[in-house]
Image 1: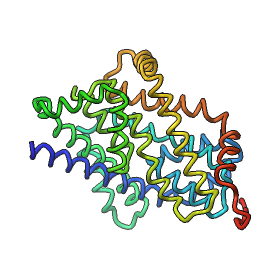
Image 2 (image 1 turned 180 degrees about the vertical axis):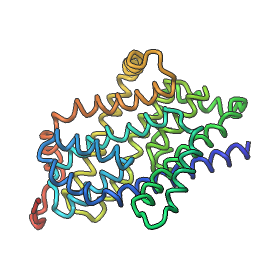
Image 3 (image 1 turned 90 degrees about the horizontal axis):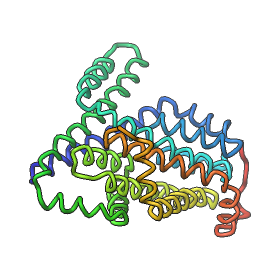
Image 4 (image 1 turned 30 degrees about the vertical axis):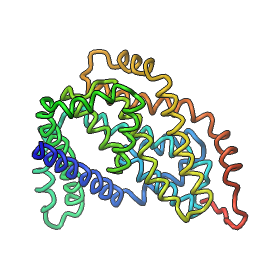
Length: 318
């Protein structure tokens, strides 16, 4: 059992390292352009949603995009009202990672690692080296998932582990587990990825995996809230909006859990369980954004009352 746990930890560390490095590498490559997109194309809520979704899909981290947005708001480069659309879009963009994970490309990860490694050493071609880093870290991400997948296989015969997994059938407990895991590892993508792997290996049912996914959506708010510490009131309101949106969406998801699971099954008819969970992740966030994008003015008024604007803040939006 100890060997299984160590192997699982090793795979998780590889995955988290790859996610961080991939996000950092891509952010360094397109960071300035991302800043331009955020500032130029967020004049209304719909545009903000689109920009947030696209940039998050590219960077592979909703937390990174929301933290960048909070930094912009704190620097008076972006209005709080416009930032809310980006936050909603980031929740859609992050579901792309779960769709990629569900493709089951882990067994081909050595190919990505080899291509990326070769490109890293192409002399005097910086673009080839940058591309090599991206390809290499994608390969490392998939290898980490594949490593975890192999590690959990023997757990089918571990009674204590299977009994613990069965507790996620209670969707409230499953959501709490998902939130706690995300709070510890600071990556909702990793939590959803683990849920996909466990479901694929029949260690987690569809119900349990979706419950864990819902909880992961709440756990991911922690790092964005940390980014608001000692920031302006506008930045604080952006972080609170992210928390409020996720919290209300999760409450609705838990209240309507059974109908939602049935809807996911209908949409994913004939799909594998890992693809069904990934579809549930995307459907949950899409529905949440479609419902709440029209309520942005109400959220803005409510948060302005809860956190009144500081008259000392200078508002200069480019």
